[in-house]
Image 1 (tube, helix red, strand yellow):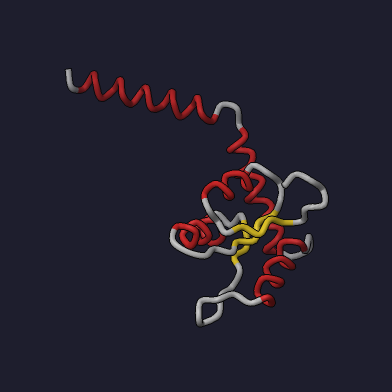
Image 2: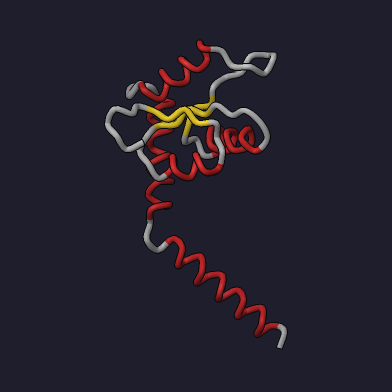
Length: 121
């Protein structure tokens, strides 16, 4: 995904694909199929706004036009949605690549455990 020839990543929104995609600079086109992929796509597209979800037809299927539209949006540097998605993606990327991320969660977890133990004694 880091190669300059890659313009965007069309992902089915599986957790592994999203984990890899979020730490790269490649823009995301969200094309979920089933189950958790649909929930992941909604979270990435609607809540976090780090990708553009491909619109589905009434029958639940996507079309080549809807895929092209989503790709066009993320590839257009002048598009407001694209600007917002890129900015949000970069914020998430920086957070995930922060060297202190894991240790801060572990430290907080250990403190909470100590508090629980002290409360029960």
